[in-house]
Length: 196
Image (cartoon, rainbow, N blue to C red; front, side):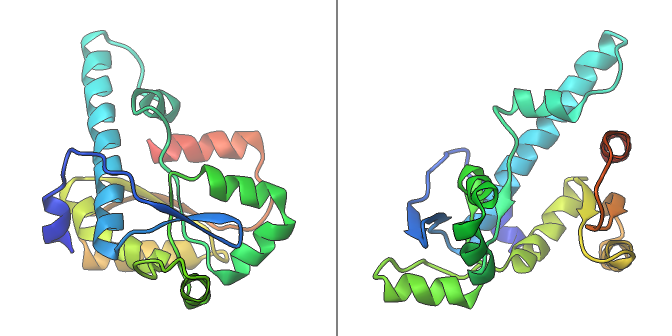
């Protein structure tokens, strides 16, 4: 997959969005989804590097994530809903809105993919989030992209970080956090600092 990602086009070709269960899904192949993610990640890495150079010349503080996103037009959020999440979004308006606002929404599970076929709006591919993420790891390693692993039970993200850095020694995992519990504002700020 990294060979495909290396040939990233500068053209921004919008993918057709297909509505399944009232949710938008970008109708992409795995290779195209990986290219979109790589292009958007690279834009943010370059924006951060450019801003850090300017700030260093001006002797200013480090660049904030908010500043980087503002220079890149917006944040880039990828969602990978499966059938369970799609059904939950029918009842949970906040979840539905989050999925609708995502920069990229790809079909994670066979249930949504099969439903697209039954509805006569076939998606090009089922793109499990973990497969998409793993296809990007060589690119992330080569481009010195910093990763923060969030979610799962306590300890799982830490173990995943260890396994990833064993397989990709130059990969930078700047932190991990489990997906349990309410986060205070101070903890959110601490995590934000860890990501820099």
